Structure formats: structure tokens, C-alpha cells
Image 1 (tube, rainbow, N blue to C red):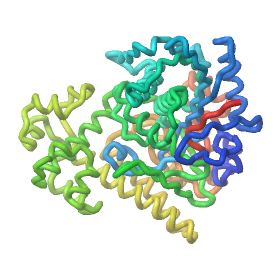
Image 2: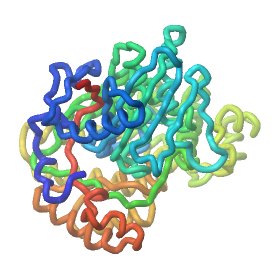
Image 3: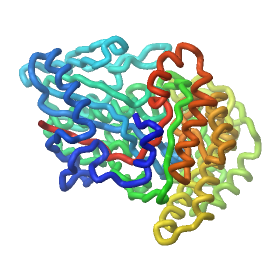
Image 4: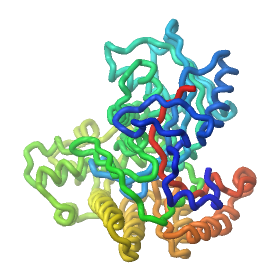
Length: 503
């Protein structure tokens, strides 16, 4: 993790790749290249430590290593599953794997470097079974199994029963909105794909990684997996999902630093229905609006972007349509059934998901307005960043900050996914004149803040350490204070996406 003393590095491009390796010619291109790991790499010591652990567990050296980064989303929250673009960047923190194969036995063995927290696991790959608990979140290894199953289903009859021995480690904060779980799924997809001899197309792997998270009950929109594979060192990515997956590098304002601050309130998407409830409300709102526009195939519309295209709506006209057609702040099951002309049984069977069967009320207007307005903010943010490459403008930089502030206000009030501790961090940010917002799914996790200078970033980090982190309960102080809280509040700069190494 970066300390406040190394904040300067977040505003400039490093001479090396995000992991500190000498970049291969086609790193960041359409396919994941196999790179020769160099001793000067930043990640070298981590991988060597994991390799030694692998040899201790299995008695042989690993055949290759995988690195998949976490991410921080600068703007565009809860819009990807509605088809709209986002603007994230990969962070330095990552999931790493040491991988070996056993062609003679279709067996999976998983050992985590932190065995005290994460129990080892093994299973027969010919009888893969992802078991979800009735309460709480999935076991950590279930995320890895999702990735394997995704490759199995993609290859179909081409799948070969090759055993895998895996050692893994991660320093992406857990349940913090930095995509630790998706990074693990994506790492499993990349490792399994390589073992199976696939061509490791980045977009294909991102698509597989996004779709296979359904096996742990998460209806992912695809942002986390897309940035995990498409990220490039030194810039954020404007990621579009419609009409097809596309990543466009976006250079962030010169001199700006992005600081990530972890509230230490943990929220796992797969352990709660909150995230899936928002997905369902957006799908219901889309169908409600589609029916209001007399579209005969209104049931087929589940994403706002598809309705936008069908009705030729711009952002302002879309927001106006929502305000005209969804006038109430709260809708009951009866309201929804009456408006859509369906029975309650049809609502449960065709419109609600297994984790949202309990829902009795729906905030369709608020959720729809957030998504449409947030999608507009993403486009504006990219346009301003591009303008700043042509000319420097203090007003433009200030407007970027305002967009981040508007995003947080919408997430707090319309999407209701903030948390009191996140609000404490936001209040401290406002007091310092720093623009910040919740990042990730919310209900805990992290904020991301944009600082306009090295000094402002350094001062801001120190304020958060003094006013927020030094006030933590004793058990959290004992864990994080010895490292001056550098694990939980740090400046970051955009790193490379998924990488594959050999010695």
C-alpha cells in the first residue's frame, strides 16, 4: 500500500508497468501476454514469497503466476448493469496466484498464503459444485470455483480435465468496494483459461468473468471485470458496454491525485440482497417506462440503455420521462402489478430474483433518476478530461469535483447506498475542500477523493488519519495504527490490468 509520503507518484506515469515489470510489447493489447518476470519488478518479492509457499505446499515450483488488480471507480456507480459506461482505474493492490498443473488427475487444490483466515480447499473438477449458504456470504473459494465453471461452460466439449494446484494471496482490501471478489474470480478465469490453452482474449475473459459471478448470486454489470482486464498503466478507462465492450484510455488531469480511504465498514455484495434489490428496481422501472411508451415488447427491456435507444432519448429527455411516468416515491407490489398488467405470481416468477422475493416496496423513480443522471455525469467527466489535455482550465477541474460531489449526493439520497461512517469521511473531505464520493457498491467500503495538488493530497491524508482513523475502536487501532494506517488510506495511480508471468 502507498503511504502519504509517496503521494507524488500518483500524478505521473511510471516508467514501468503497473506491477513494476518491464512491459512486453503487447501488454495491454487485445490478449494477455505471457511476460518474463524481472527481478526489479515491484511485485517480484510478493510473487517469490508466494512461489516459496507453493513449493512448501506441493513440493515443486509453480509453472506460472497470475496478477489481477483491484479497482477504484472514479465516477459511474450502479450504472453498468443498466448498460451505461463507467470510468474506473485499476489500483496497485492485487490478487496473485502461483499455478501448477496435474494432467493425470482432474483435481483442484487451493491453498491461501493467509491460511489462518482462509481454509484450504480441494475438489474433483469433474464434479464441480458451488454451494451457497442460506445466510451470510459464500466461502472464499466459491469465487475461485465460479471462474473455473465460467471457463468450463465457455469451452463446452473442448474442456479438458486438467488438475490445478494453486497458491494465492491478495492485498486488495476485503469488502471495501475495491473489487477484491471480482479480482479473485477474474484471476481464476485467467489461470484456468491459460491451463486450457485458450487464446486469452481480454474482452472475452472479462465477459466470462462477469457472467460467471451469477453462480454466487451476484448480478454483475461487468465494470469490475472489464477494468481488471482492460486497464492500462497511467490512465483511467472509459468502459462502454453497449453495443459491445470497449475501453478507451482517459488521461486524468495533470497534477491531480486520487486518494482512497476505507471506512472499514465491510459489505459483501453476495452476502446481502441490497445490491440485487437495486438491480431489480432498475429492471422494473425500465419495463414500466417501456410499457408507458406503448412498446409491444416491453417485457424484453431490462436495461435503461436499451429503452433509450428504442425511443431515441437523450439524457435530459430520459430524466423528464422518468419524472412524468414515475411520479410516486414508493410503489407497492399491487402498484407494480396493476401498472404492468401482471399477477403477483408473475411478478415473483418473471421479475424478481431468488434473493429479492421478499421485496414488498419499490423506489422506481429514485433508482431510475440516479442511473440516468449518473450516466450523464460519466460522459461529462470524460469530455472535461479530454478538454484538459488540450488546455489547462481551473474551472474545468473544479467541474470534475462538482460531478463527483453530485454523484455522491445521488448515491446517498436516490440510491440509498451510503453509510454513516462513509458520511463522516465525506464530511471531513468537504471541510478540507476536497471532492469525494463513495466508490463501489456502497453500504460501507471506500470513498475516492480527487485532490488538485501533491500538497493538498498529503494534507488531506493526514487529516483523515488524525480525525477519522485515530478515533477507531481499540481492536482496529491495534491492527492498522502500527503501519500508520497506510493500508486503509492511500494515494493510488492507475496500474496495468491482468498479467501472466513466467520465471
